[in-house]
Picture (tube, rainbow, N blue to C red):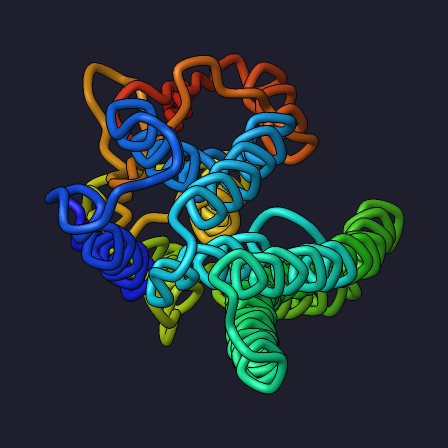
Length: 366
């Protein structure tokens, strides 16, 4: 079960406040200008629209819900003139607007809300000084709420971008190290080729000379050929020993990639007996990186589980988060590219979003 974050608790608090300030009209202590049943229906519509605009992330749903929330808040406030605390509803809509529209749009809503507050004071017959003071007070409250919420959202975006860059930088460093090792092996193999070619040429010339010289000089060329052969054997053993590398520790590489991520707990489990080729290792590392960055960017998750196992000659990486998921997930450029990479390796990549977001990559082991 996912834990509620600070934003969720803030939303619950705002809804509790909305119901609390509306309770006098709900309980019949104050009579609205419209039938009470209609007024309660508007309040329910307001609460639902606030919830939908805060929970949905696919346009145009949040924009439509925000529009309904703003209009219903005005109707609720204007139909119960003189109930000052009810004006808090427009403050809630101003704060919610920062999640849906740019800051300029929120400023427009704040100004319109302030006009509604001024109109309610006129309806209540308040003195001019009280009208201006009350309107100015709620204007400042709205501005403070909007600016503080916008600042919070900007900091959250910066943290998300920083976490994503952290994962990408760690993954790039791991892949660069692997590329460096590959280049070093290529260099050593070239040196081995040149060394063997030179030594074998010398060995061949000495053996050829031994064939054509008299018996008294054969021993000299044979000894020389033996010396070259022994030197060649030593060089080959030394070079092959240098080329022999330790197996890549995918578990350590993946843990290094996600180390220090804020707000996301990543559990990684890798089969210790897994034997993969270089291209397969890179594919799985890239898939783990893409799963982490997508979870940070889109899933609103607190936990991600990555398992890399081998069964019946097939290696499988499954990454699953506890986020919001999507019934019809759309693949971005990263996952599409990874699907092509796995297909080139003779494997497959699948994506599911019914319960959280799950991405699975499979290839046959060598």
